[in-house]
Amino acid sequence: MFVLFFLLWIVFNGQITLEIVLFGLVISAALYWFICRFMEYSFQRELAYLKKGGYLIQYLYYLLKEIVKANFATIKLICSAGRVVEPAVIVFEISFKTDTARFLLANSITLTPGTITVAVDGDKFIVHCLDKTLAEGIESSVFVQLLEKIEA
Image (cartoon, rainbow, N blue to C red; front, side, top):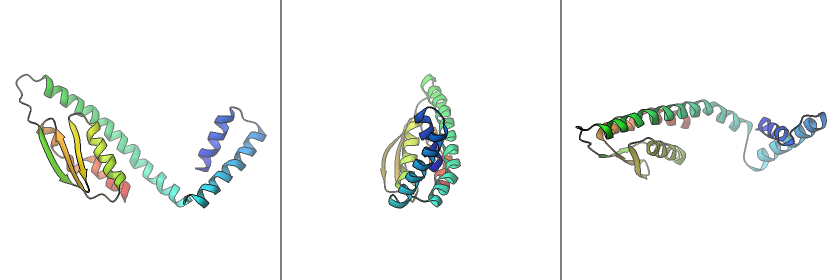
């Protein structure tokens, strides 16, 4: 966080001089001390966030990949003349520790074409799928596995 404060200071100043760098170091250190002292922030918490950052990048990669795959599957369903679309509503439970994990999973499902999270009630997810083939494996998807790793 200290480095982020310092980089923002340099960017906002638009130039690099000895005075700006020294003053930026002092200001950044003061801000970092303030958030550690009064906002329950710590260096250990920062390291934990950095460790989880890799999982978040991996999560975004798989989310984009699944969105692209689901787009093609949805287009195939819509454009197939002889195929009968069988919508499905599925209910499954996943016990996450945090509301953030529930939020991310519910929104990831909704962002993926052909599926919509209808409701989340505690650990119970209710999802509407355009076709029952889109519902396969949703409760044990890579999203769930990565969110469990992030929570651990």
